Length: 150
Image 1 (cartoon, rainbow, N blue to C red):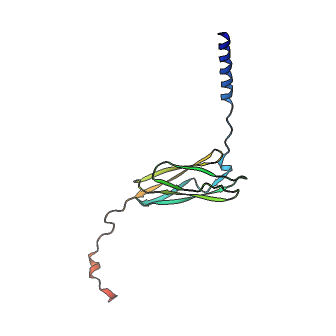
Image 2 (image 1 turned 30 degrees about the vertical axis):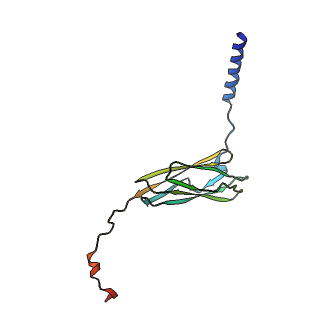
């Protein structure tokens, strides 16, 4: 029984030492990919009118990079992307679409996953507005205008 107990203590000690070691460091994505923007402002857009923007990126590393996945925060966002690979120095982009069916202010996120365990969260925000049903008042004088400008 003493041997089993001693073995369990030794095993627990090995596990705790291994747990305290630093995991493999993940490379800093800012040293691999340069993002033109990470928080896009749509400004004011009409409610229900789709809008999109291109997220421009550049591979600033010495190796090629590839996109593994693009995850959106909700069904109102649609990304269009190609996995690559993208060579060193190459510019590439992802088109991020928003359907506009959120009333008022909105703030959304898209997470990009790259080979090698790199990821980046991109944000976009704005505000939708609804046009009044009768945006311009009727002008009864229009029917009284003469045709031909005479």
